[in-house]
Length: 316
Image 1 (cartoon, helix red, strand yellow):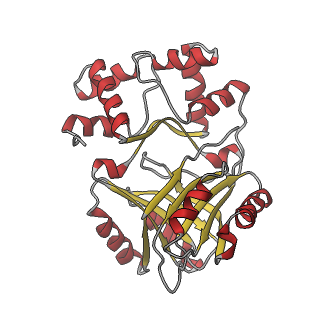
Image 2: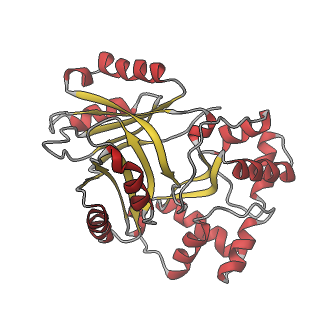
């Protein structure tokens, strides 16, 4: 795979905060980094082909859309069958993420992780129970960890987001845009016009609706999600056992690291779960060490060992 040059990295960096909501966004991006619109489009298409861009489009705040039953289902599966079972679970439509990660004994015996997002905990529990009943998963020790509170969710855009209990209302066109643009977005000189044509909306209406959803907090941003590993970086899941009386303090310390992209409280002895994303794989160890030194608590890193499915998409 051809390595990213400095212009590629400048392009990745300038798009980290989202695509400009203008009729010709790629021309605007090019003007910021000193290249032509055509070069921006060509480079983005190449990064997409290389897998550096995982997907391009809307990045939703699923809690603001009512998807607050966020469950991490985990199993302790023998190493010689975990890959086979992971692929089976990943085939279920409601499974949004599925990975193999290392055990961290004695506190964490599980090695197969699935995420299920829903609006109702009972529905999500029933879906996970179905996984256990319909597959071999139920024959292995397992647990379900629902998130209790979101401390940070920013994806490729660094910066904390506020927790809100409110569901933000959407009009019919907002819903159509969300349902159609979570997975892909045109890479051409008038992308909003092209996307709008498929939805029967004008270019101006597309931009107005997306800007409104960004302003209201329905969308965390609009633009590409990157594959850090394809850029020489790394992404890991990490967990901590935080005393309840220190939870907010520790969350603030962890979230102050720009490398921390997501941070959730979950129901388990390991009660704080966060994602660390870095531009250079070697930086993971340094970030973990800094968090441990600052908090006085042990961090349990759980890097991805095998990926079976990643496709978080909500239908509204």
